[in-house]
Length: 143
Image (cartoon, rainbow, N blue to C red; front, side):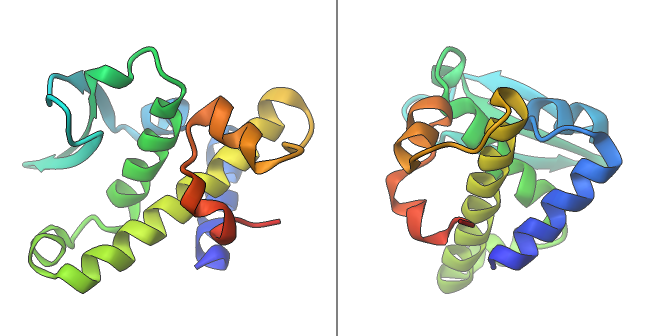
C-alpha cells in the first residue's frame, strides 16, 4: 500500500510540481468546495456527469486537518473514480479503500511538510499538529 501511494505521489509531483493537495486538485481540474454537512462527513468525493467535486465540511475551513481530509478525498477522486457503486455496497472493500486513501494522504502530508519547511517532520506528532494526520496512521506511513 505504501509503495502504491508513493508512486502516485511521485507521479503527481513530477506532473504538477507540488505536494499541496489544494494546488493539486486545482491543477488536476477538481473543484473543492466547503459545504455545511453538519458533524459528518469531513469530506466527500462526488461525481456529477463528467465533473468530479470534492466537498469538505465547512467546519474544516480554519483547521489544519483540511489538508489531510482533502488529500484523502483526492486519492478517492484519482484512484477510485469508477468504484462508487462498489464503494457504497461493500463493507470490507470500503475499509480497504479508506485505508489506501488515508495512507496516501498521510504520505502526501509528509512530502507537503518537506516542501513547505525544507526538511522532514521530526516526529509523527508534528504531522498531527500541522496537517491533522490521524494518530492511527503512524504505522502505515513511509519512514
